[in-house]
Image (cartoon, rainbow, N blue to C red; front, side, top):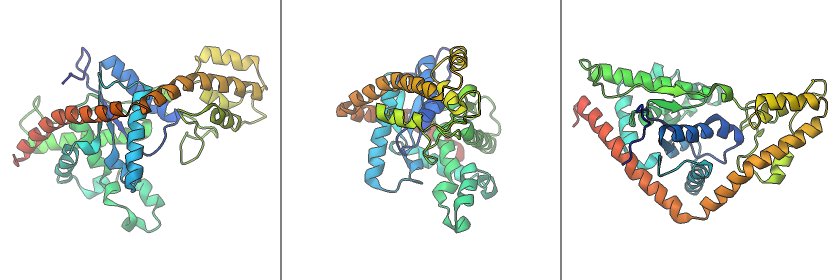
Amino acid sequence: MKTIHNEQGRTILSGIKPTGKPHIGNYFGALKQFVDLQNKHNGGFFMIADYHALNFIQNAEEMRTLTKDLLIDFLAIGLDPEKSVIFKQSDVSEHTELAWIFDTITTLPYLKRAHAYKDAMEKAEGGEEKISMGTFNYPMLMAADILLYSPDIVPVGQDQKQHIEFARDTAEKFNRTFCPEQSEGSIFKLPEAYIMKDVETVAGIDGRKMSKSYNNYISLFAEDSEIEEKVMAIVTDSKAEYPENVFYIHKLFRPAESLDKLYDENKGQYKKLKEILIEDLKSFIKPLREKRREVASDTSLVKRVLEEGREKARTVASLKLAEAKRAVGVL
């Protein structure tokens, strides 16, 4: 198996739930980071988090379709199975086994600090009784996902930074509980969150964070007609010097200096600025869309990537789980 690191030995890992088509906010907030880091560090671990998705997707055929679609998306944006390990969470049973070990050293009050649990509590009409254990226990499975592969950095959005903090806390507690006399030789490495400061939050067509739940997104593989429709629907303020919501999306595709000049030269011409953004979006999305169609047509590639990814991921995960099991005394 190829070593997943650069000359400094930095390992990267991240994952995405298969819950639907990605939008440009997903790309600039996470997916682009995956590709950039893969190329910088000569690889990485990239996981399709299908067990996490069970908290939202509870239909077998839908899950299979969304999982396959996400794998195709990964390949279309430039994740390279020759460099990186691309795998399904559910193909590596070590994730759920390690999560159980972490459960035994984790308290209820600690898990109630999780954003996912707090959000669920706010939305649950029946209160805590309506929250599944999958939602409540989400941070421990996430910690297992991360710590099995000993990553140095984990690319995440700003709103996911807590997941890395939970993983670090869990690693520290495990090491302290089961390896108190070890310093350099502790079982689990403490990962660092990697957040690109200039794309922490990508604005949607209404100015809020781009999100499927707000229906304010532009699909990453959108057809030209969808691009035109979404951009022309961007909310603008006729009293402003320039259309901020158009600008915030546009700055993803042009250098700031060039964009500032463009908007200065076209003050008040909102329609023209939207038309320029449409052309820039079309130029950006077209090659991605065409690549995705090419990948989707090669069914043998899709199957092979998952099979090879499973074996590579399990090779690493099984060794780390064995260390943990020996430390707790069950092996």
